[in-house]
Each structure stands twice: as C-alpha cells, then as structure tokens.
Amino acid sequence: MGRTAIKIKCKCLKSHCLKNYCECHNMGMKCGPECRCVECENGEVVLQAKEECMEMGNYFDHHLYFDI
Image 1: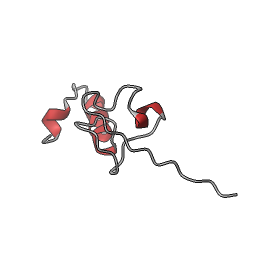
Image 2: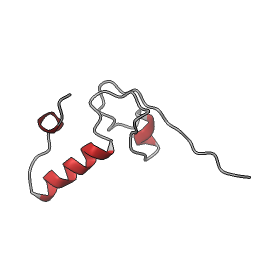
Image 3: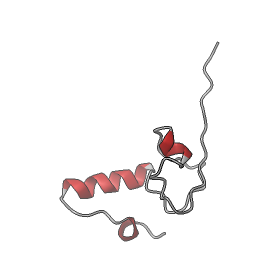
C-alpha cells in the first residue's frame, strides 16, 4: 500500500509557531502556505533569515525583516 502524506494546517495566533501546541512544530515540521498562522517564525523564509542573522552574530527580530 502507498503512504499518504499528512497535511497539517496550524492556526496559531500568539505563539509564533514556536510552542508544542502548534501542530506543525509539534510534529517537527515547518509551517507551509496552507497554514493560517499569524506572525509565524516556523516557516522557510523566516528560518533562513534567522539563520543568516545568527551567522553574522546579530539578534533576529522578525518585525525588522517582514512587514507583518
């Protein structure tokens, strides 16, 4: 039998998808375009920006990088 992909759609409002009550974070997944989260910090774009800031030794604040 074929495996069925699990599609998780979180809808976090205050946790920035960084807590275990975010369905995506709890499953070890990044948030995707189908999620309805607010000010997500668990998505691909934010994680790349955060990694770049940390490599340069800077503090990451998502409000400086994204117009949310």
